[in-house]
Length: 211
Image (cartoon, rainbow, N blue to C red; front, side, top):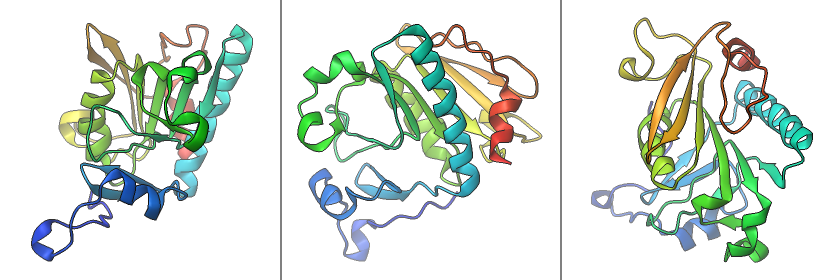
C-alpha cells in the first residue's frame, strides 16, 4: 500500500513529527496515527467501520456477560512510553479499567501509554497493511498485549502473511512467551479467543461484515 504520509523524509525539507506536534495537528482527528514520526491515514471507509463495529459489539457482549471491569475504545490514542515518535490508534481496543489509575495521561487527555492497560486489540486492514502485519505485530507483542486480531476482509496483505492466492483472512495473534503465535482463519473456521473464551464467532462472520 502507499500510505498517506503527511510528514515527509528530511531531504524534502520537512522534518518528521514528534508526538507533541502530532497531538497539536491531529490529536482531535481519529483518522490518523503516528509511526516513527510519519503520519498515516487509517482510511476509515464504510466497510472498514462495519468490521470494527461488529467486533466492538461482540466484545461488549462478552465483557458484560462476564462482569469484567473492561470497556471497548475505538481508535483511542495509544502512545507507548518506550517507543519514540509513535502514537497508535487501534481500530478496536479492549481496555482494563482497573489499570487506568496507573495511566499518567488518561485523566486529562484520554491517552494510553501502558501495554498493561490493553487486553485486546483488533486492526482492520486497509492499504497500509504493512503496519498491521509487521510493525504492530512486533510492538503489540513487546508491549504484552495478550491478543491481537488482524482483520483483512479484502485480502490486501502480502503473500507471506496470508498466503497465495490472496483471500480474506483473519489472523489471530496470541501472546506466548513474549511473542505472537499466529493462526490464519477463513470461511466457517471458528475463532478461539483466549481473552473471550465464550465467544461464538466464525472468521466468515467477521470478514463478511466488511461487505
